[in-house]
Image (cartoon, rainbow, N blue to C red; front, side):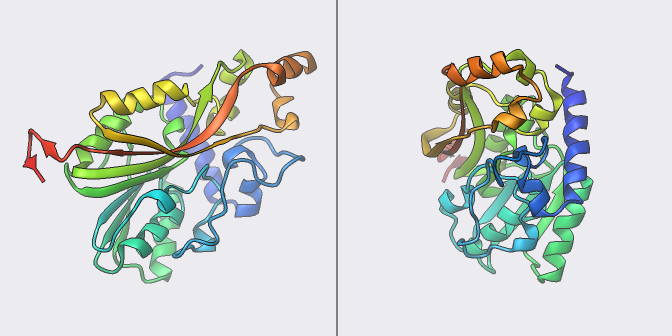
Amino acid sequence: MQTEQELKNLVREKYAQIAAQDKDTNAASCCGAGGCSTEVYNIMSDDYTQLEGYNADADLGLGCGLPTQFAMITPGQTVIDLGSGAGNDAFIARHEAGESGKVIGIDFTPEMIEKARHNAEVRGFNNVEFRQGDIEKMPVTANTADVIVSNCVLNLVPNKDGVFKEIFRVLKPGGHFSISDIVLVGNLPANIRNAAEMYAGCVSGAIQREVYLELIKVNGFTSILVQKEKQIIIPDDILRNYLSESELESFKRSDVGIYSITVYAQKPCCDPAVGCC
């Protein structure tokens, strides 16, 4: 597997390509970045179309859940969307936070930032801004956000512990997050685990479910709750790019599970640095 910087460069390159594609093209691949599948139209993403604030132009079909549906955003709050893409979750968060609220989208890829800013400008969304940056080192001051959301992004980051530390720093005391992500139960075959395309496709960068939840706990969060969980089935025609027929059959008989989970957690109300809320 590549170094952390090489993985980051891979993600930036792949998602720059995705920014130039339409949703139908993205939806036909694994999280928008893998090889095309002939078995399914859409592998991971959930249906956003019934959510208030949905804008089809901002939906690239890249998510693996509906974190904004579970985030309990209220009017006037400040919301940060990690890995904001073309703005889909940010615009739904804006609807929930209202005109008195504020939404900040952070994305690693300049092409995504450009697309999101265009989508916000044409809609006159003056209380939504998009900042280019690494979510391991967010371009945001401490204790800024009431709520943080993210959709199928942390699995793309090599240093997940660093991201949770940044989330803790940026949330206000008493603030919370709702994050959708891909996690594993059991060990992926080496050919999948070491494939660059499967990393960019939100699979091989995923970590074990219990490790993911433990990272949240050890970074100081409380009230941890798995709000939603669903199994992700990778179609055979994608898996055959990495596995022989015998390896494929062995994998399908194994107890390995690939899951989308949406997780809620709070930053404690009392923070030694700033006191109690």
